[in-house]
Length: 162
Image (cartoon, rainbow, N blue to C red):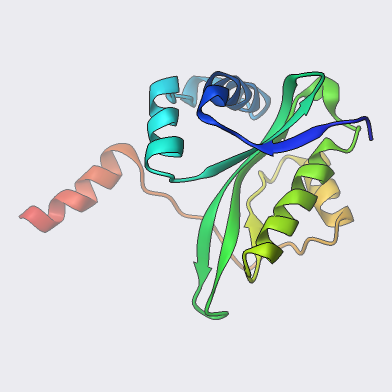
């Protein structure tokens, strides 16, 4: 692995974070779905503390990131870390940065007394699936992710005011 710096993002990193988000969306064939702005990221990450960002830098340039937040397991009775996104720029892959990000997240989870580190992966993303399995991650085939967003989220919430 080439020399890299792993660090928590600060508010001045918001432009780099947004660029990495856009690069991730391009990779996942969903560039048109990114509505995040620098202002929204500043508010969500650094005012509301909704999530944290771990950056990996090489030669002063952000080449990857991990966006994560605290989750909770009722069965364990402990907090956990949910990894929302892990991304390394395509030209920087294969150098150990993704593994380094996960190692740092594992260390954070252990230091914080978390019971688990979890994430989702797109079914078609076989390179990432192979990578995660190589680290010893267990596939949770018995769970399916569901989502409410946009109009359907608002419609469900509006049912309370009727």
